[in-house]
Image 1: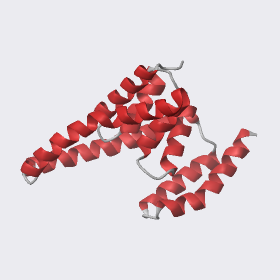
Image 2: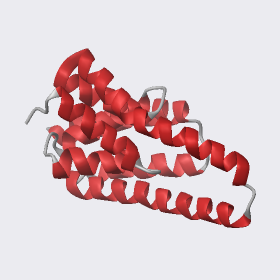
Image 3: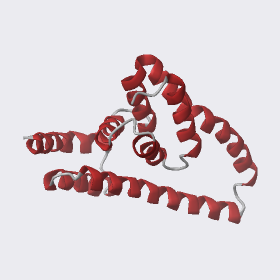
Image 4: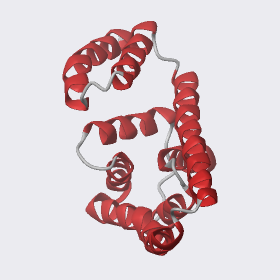
Amino acid sequence: MTPSRTQLFLAYLRIGLTGFGGVNAWARQLLVEKKGWLTDQQYAEALGVGQVLPGPNALNCAINIGTRFHGAAGAALAGIGLFAGPMAVLLGVAALYDRYGQIPLVRAVLTGIAAAAAGMVLGTAIKMAIKLRPTPMLTATGLLALVLALLRVPLPLVLLGLAPLGIWAARRAAR
C-alpha cells in the first residue's frame, strides 16, 4: 500500500514525537507492523542504507522511505515530519535543562531514560533479526560489527572491513 503524501508526513510527525530515544524502533513498528507500508526486509534495507550514510540514520532512513513513495516531495515531507515536532519540544526542554539540569532528581531521570532508550535499540535489533532470519555468516558479520563498536573502532573502518563480507554473505544466501 502506498501512503498519500499527507499520510506519510503525519506518520513521520508521529514517529518524531513519540520516538523518544529510539526513533527507528518506533518507525519500524508504525511503518511495518501497524501500517503495513513496508515489509521487514524493505525497512531493514532502508535502515541499513541510512546507517552507512553520513548524517542522522533516522533522517537518512526517512528520506529513503519518503523517496520510495513520493520522490523528492516524499523525502522532504518525511524529513520535515520527523524533525518538526521534536525540534519544538527540544527547544523547550533545552531551556528547562539549562535552568534545572544540575538537580540530582533531574540527572537521575535522564539516566533512566538513557537506559530505556538503549533497551529499545537492542529490542528492535533482536526483533529484526528474528523476523529476517539471517544466515549464520550474516549473523556473524553483525556480531563482529557489534564487537568492533564496543571496542570503539571508527565506523568507516568497520564499514570498509565488514561491508565486503556482508555483501558476499548476502549474495551467497540469495543463491
